[in-house]
Image (cartoon, rainbow, N blue to C red; front, side):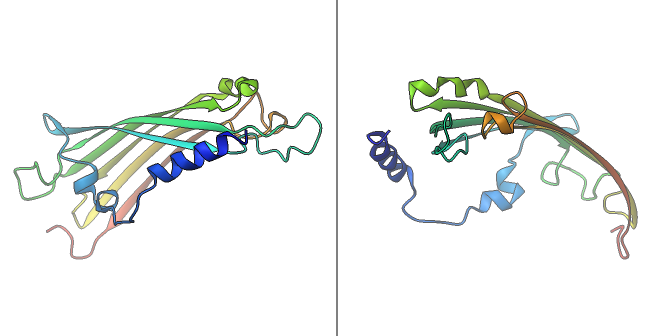
Length: 190
């Protein structure tokens, strides 16, 4: 374990950025979402993201009690997603917004674990797949009076921590949300 620590530190320093800079694409959908793929009066926006990191105490134990061990792992998470929406303002030929705007999306997030010690290979069984989907319908989004409906489903999986604290080597949570609203916009309808 002690021989790996300098290697991990060197790897982290090598990948660390030398300067920090603003990431405009994160906050501006014109950059982060892109043009998309046109499908009739709808746009498809496929994407994929990835994360890679190191966890020095995956089981979140002190290591002081008998049977407790400290397990360090490398973690990889890959998240593909797809969003479907009505045409955005950049693609619409009409200057006015449509009477109905729709957006829906789905994602899956796969997590893989790589233990740094072969004695800890059992933590590989905690790999998991989380999923989610959402939809939003806006009726008269620019009118004086409008309405909206939303729905979302997310399956979250938490596999970190000691086995005694988790049910079946993981904590799974399904969340279903829905809602609706009515909007009044004084001065709207332009």
